Length: 430
Image (cartoon, rainbow, N blue to C red; front, side, top):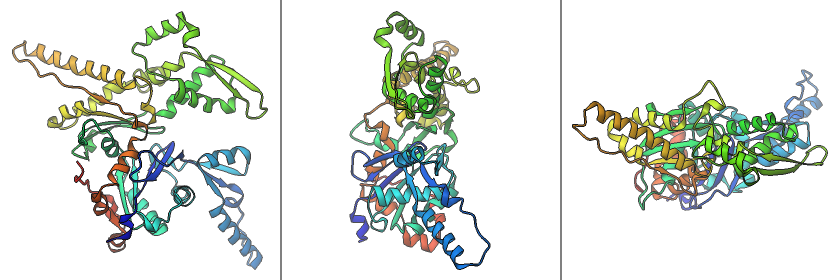
């Protein structure tokens, strides 16, 4: 038996905004940190001398070694870039896809050795990817994992499938459903049938968590709130995470705020980063206008005007007809940007309204001779949905089937990186 299979697998969910990592079998990730790398520009921009002098060669060699060592990730990277002008930030993942493989490799290196503090040769690895990731990206991932870190086994899972595995609606794990995955930099509506993604029906959403933050920042700036420019994005992000909620009717919500401002307006206090002077600002309409972007996107972007419930409905209607009832019955939320209060209730109400309107129109066309069966619409919300992808990975990597489904180092050496283009869906636990 492979000794690595007796140890818990490492589960790393790399998102555009945040990376969640930990060991299989745990309920929550051990570490959650921003997906960012701070690199020392002094070494990166070192001029290459054509001179053959040994001292110059040694200087260049040492600079290359130091460049490989002198970098930070996560909160440390953000702090370093603020305190020192020699460090520049690099975001290796953009819109769900790896954009800079060198930075990504460095990021994984720190995750494994500095945070998880494990030897990669002793653990199987489960990594996640966005649903529209090209197969070449999986090959690059396999090369880095097997060549650089020498891992014994690797499984690359699609994020929505893991989110479904985390969504326990019954004692049995239901692997048919629609995953509404809204992260910081990428958002998708993904239908899954029996653990397989229906690729032709995936609907990307051009609005994600960072857009909500920018919208809140814009609203506060237009109102003339006293927030320092260098701190405004961070304040907007904190307002989004701590004070925003989803309303049932935007007009009624405006009236409530106007009628009782003292009850609904919150106050934010902070200190200016440069001078340390205190400042305060009010948080008003943006509390409900931020999440409202998902239901009335035209208030933020005139180029995109399709509400989220409509996108979900179109996604399900484009799926095979025999899966549609099961998909409506299990709409699973995933990602930090679905955590707004009452978000699932509003989504379920609006989606139900669309479905019922279609059924009534269909019955009217038939003249009332045949009554359509009602369609059950159920939006599943659970406390772990913020880390649903990671938790689903933790659950799957805890099963014995996981170790047999992984691509091993021996297979990689025999067949090459192309083996990771496909990752089998194992059904032992379903």
